[in-house]
Length: 329
Image (tube, rainbow, N blue to C red):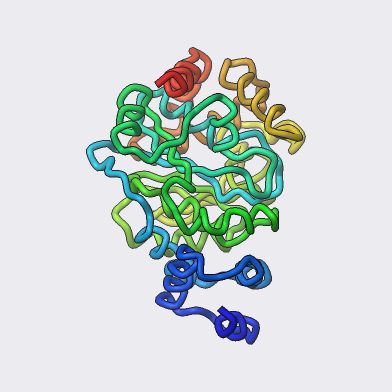
């Protein structure tokens, strides 16, 4: 690792194969915490290259405990995290709304590193038991239309750096990798990134693959559609700039989608929204994200129809019933 760090300090970049090997060595716990922290810090100081990100991703996918959901048309809805905005759990709520419409969701997630509450924190607070058993997860998909893939259960490399990431409490390149390494290889993805540069990297990597995807970056720094301002959406068809007004939505204030100061507060907000007792701003944000997810799965669907479908799922408590089923299984 010393030699690698010296090269990186000299502003050299890793090739795809070098990046892949470093991640394999990290998973094997070959490096101490100081080296790991130094290595992660490099990629906070300068942009990561496509080759580096591709190599890290390939290593994590090669090392991952895989689950085969190829018989289902699944979607993952996930952001990088690390946007520092402390919103409520938008992608997790969106996932339950989409599952409430009858679509199959294979949600990949983790504990929070740089915010108050990640998707794993939220589900654990509701009593969900994490597992990497394929039969159990398939049962969840069959009966609740959603399963949850807790990253440390599937990714030894992520587990190996967990304590260092937690100690740093900053966004690292592992935040960038999370949405790209779902171990079930979903056929559809709605991904969010905290800056447009990472959105372009994702687009470069994913456009070569036989999947449907949308990559979201809201220009004021959110890794989801926040309705606080315009957002970019990258798909195989190109790049769009969309304003809330284009969707018939009002712009909202950052304070209207605040997620609370701790997991308990975040869980309370989550429960209010999924019980159809959220504010207009909270509801519109999750419904807009869900509408775009539904459009990714079925590209012939209009945004208006997708939004109405999501609205029925939330307000008729189908999303809530989906959460209840998942917790009870």
